[in-house]
Image (cartoon, rainbow, N blue to C red; front, side, top):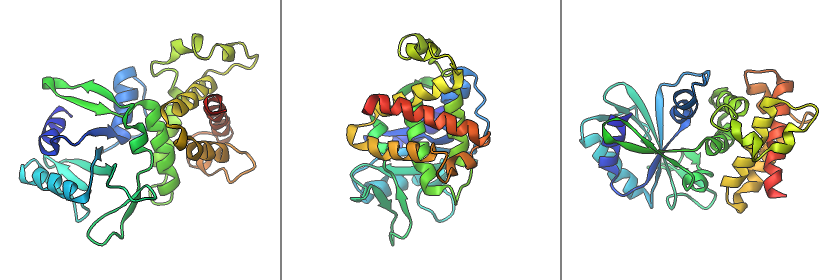
Length: 264
């Protein structure tokens, strides 16, 4: 990761970028807290804040010219680092269209929704890597937001991917450095007669998801949480997760309650 970060930074110059996706999940859960995330990944997702497509094309050209990155098929956003590590690039920022999507050149037929990336950028965390390298990484509640949004867009094309990651975050949020917050930020949950450790973590996750989002972005995320936690609805997200659907509904309902604690 250190070699990748250094080579990537050399090509991006002043353009901010941060690590997202399953590699970020592994750093935040497995490497930081020893939590098995349950799903292996073979790629790295890097989100870049860019003003326009000309800047993206210039950065991509520098990456390829440096010799350590190569094209991965014909898709502009897919590269390979040093012949084995797949890298996906996700531009966001002023490059976005009015509907918060990006339309990839040259013909704009491939459209990707990037709502959420700009919203969570300010909450990214600096991580020290070997050899003096650093990289900014999405925070765990921000990753949950992005995974929830991504699931709504690609659940049919990439089934299970985002739902699996979201399930891991929902169930293990307290164990990921948040256990002590039960006694500071969620003390009333401890007094409930049916206290449940995982559900308390989901509540705190929902609370933190709302806290990091700008006010204008909260309704979109709240709508998904409320819809997917409704036992009388389609229950699509619960069906995509690798655990009992009844348990998933309880986790989503708890997360939605934590979210509403901030927004109400």
